[in-house]
Length: 455
Image (cartoon, rainbow, N blue to C red; front, side, top):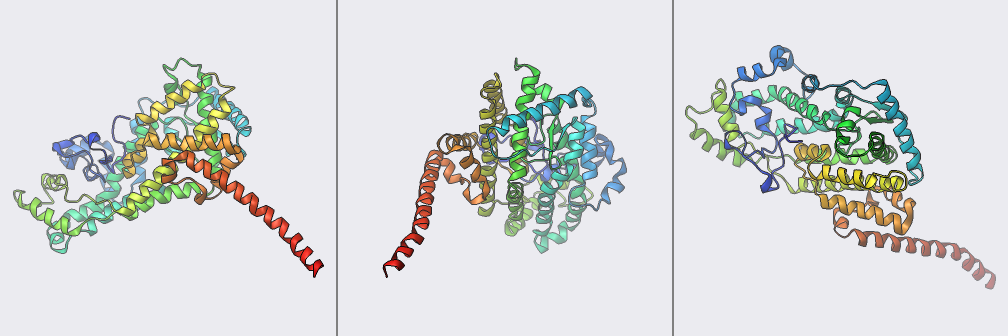
């Protein structure tokens, strides 16, 4: 994905990945104030924005949105209009092929994991269907972030500055849902061009029990791979079916991932003193000061960086937890799919390598979390997680491997992933200790009984 999908802004943790944005400002606007104000922050007038987005013809209706911090009606319309030109509805033949692939994938997975199938129904979604049917899941993930961002920006203004800046703060409150809706719609449209399953972004986005492939994107993924189309489809079906098993039978997993994102949102703070100093400096350098009727003055203020949130230690911890969980999910899926496919799917190694390259260059999951919460997934974390699951399988068996998902405290931590083989070795020691404890418990009644007889 070449463009930043979400209006929250890309991560700026890696200096080499920062590029100048409009007007020479860094592209790492961490919560997308430039995106939040659309063309205004980029130097365009409101008329330019309206001209480029016909959906703004019903501006009054959109401005009256009361469904939350993101205008999801606008997001849906924007995403679908973006997909209109290249949209291909799924055919009956594609639906049949997807259903057969997912059923076969589940049969193969039955032999390598004790986690039962998580698929009750199969679906072959078009790109438009992917957008429409995943909106509820996106809302649960994004609304708390958007609400916190807008609230932090408006509430952190010092009292003196708020008197002069009040009209702009009001604009931020009214326009938040509108502009977040526009940006999320753009994001979903771009993601819909790439996702091949309902779990491609690291979270299950489909309704519970529904296994999904996106045939149009599966065909695009297969292009140039020199592998039969049905083999590529089956490989992706294995990944979808494995992910569905994990999320269906590890009930706390989805919530833990969402909680990590929301924990990051709760930590969003802005240094009031820094804002006051910045506003004073910014306004002193702006001819005529802040004029809410003049988009250029708003643009200059947003571009000055005074409203940039600061990242807290708590947010670092939330990001670390999120990165570790996503790596563990991806590593487990890689491991069980490799085990299920190794003697059955001739092109598995080549397809797995293609998937690794896709992640390394920024696939849907990586881009989603990079732009949503500023998390750059490190390939080393994914490799280390896969090492844990593979070694657990070899040394302790698939039951012990999958048993680690029975409670979040049993999973490897980020520190454990630094030395994955040490973590696996400790599991063997824990097993031996548990066996010794069980033996002692069995012997104790006999010893007590013998003591009573001697007495």
